[in-house]
Image (cartoon, rainbow, N blue to C red; front, side, top):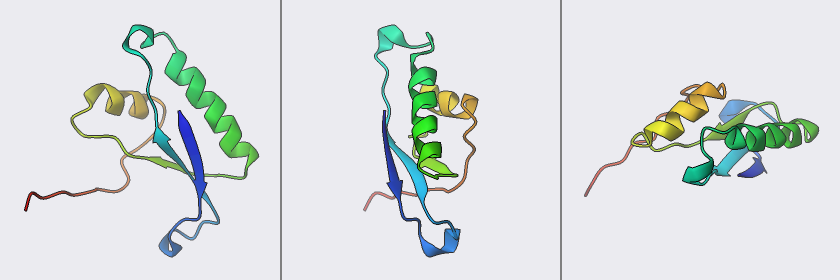
Length: 85
């Protein structure tokens, strides 16, 4: 799991924001608390660095990933759109 601290866009009116850029748990270790343990350590790191909010992106086709993030307390926030040219 990789976490970053960024300066948010001005409309957010926050000093800094956390972002989870990559998260992966090997298939054999899923549903055993590994992802939750990694995320809790990352939460601790964000809090110790004064981060109040964390963002991430998850592909809508990744049902397991979306379900995990919802279970960990993340809510839908922004919509990212795509179009084939």
